[in-house]
Length: 317
Image 1: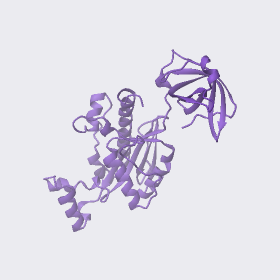
Image 2 (image 1 turned 90 degrees about the vertical axis):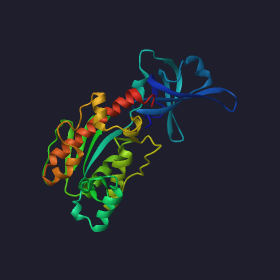
Image 3 (image 1 turned 30 degrees about the horizontal axis):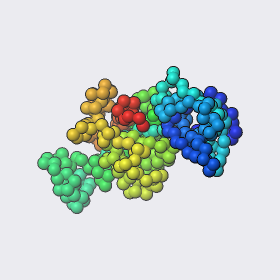
Image 4 (image 1 turned 45 degrees about the vertical axis):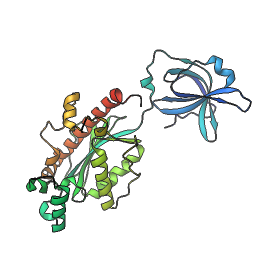
C-alpha cells in the first residue's frame, strides 16, 4: 500500500521508518540515495540527491524526520528529501505499515451417513477414515470432508478495525454475543459463500488456524461445487498472504488451538461447552446462535494468538 501525497506537496517534519537504503550513481557519476520509507499508512520511495547528503542523517531500521517535497514521475509519487534526522524518541515498530488483515474460521456440517450412496459410504469408511477403528465414529465425520459437507458459518475479525462478523446459515434472526460483531444470515450455502468472497478483496493478508489443510481447501471446493467465483487464487505455501498459525507455531507436531490458548493465556473458545463436533447436531436442533457465537469466539482466539505471534515471535516482518 503506497503512501499518497499530492504532486509537489511540501513535506515538513514528517516521520517515517527507513526500511532500506541503496546508493546509486547518476550518469555523471554523482552518488545519490534511494530510501524505502514506511509508516502505518504504507510505503513510499524517497531520493536524496548528492548536494543534500550532508544535511541528512539516516539508518536502516531507524525513524527519521523528513523535510522536502513530493514528486510525481512516470505516474508514481515519491519524495525528494532536502534534509532528514534520526528521531531517537520513537519506536520503529510503531511505523510498520498496517496490512489489511482478516482472521477467520469456518464451521461445517455434514450429511447423515444414510444419505450417502454405497460408493460414498465405502469411500468414507475405507478410504478417508480407514484409520478410524470405530466405524460408528467414522460415520459421523462427514462434516470434515467438503464433498460430503457444507460451510454453515464463517467467523472473522478485521485486525485493523478490531471489528468482527459472522456469516451463518439460519432460518431466523440471530444476535451477536460480542458488541463489536455483526451477524448476517443466509438460507443457502451459495449465498453465504458469495457474500464472503465479496468482502475479501480489500484484505491483503488472511490468517487462520489450520487453514492450509482445512479452511481454504474446504472453501475452495465448496465454491466450485456451488459455482461461486473466487476473487483470487489461493497460494497456501510460500506466501505470507495466507498465514496458517498452525504451521508457524508448532514443535514436533501441531498443537490444538485450545491447548495453545491455555498456554498463551487466551480465553478458550470451547470453554462454553461447544465444540466443532457439535455443529451438525446444533444445526439440526435449530441452535443457530450457538454456532455463530462459537465461530466468533474461535475467530477472536485466533486473532489474539496471531497478535502474540506477530509482536513477539515473528521477528521483523
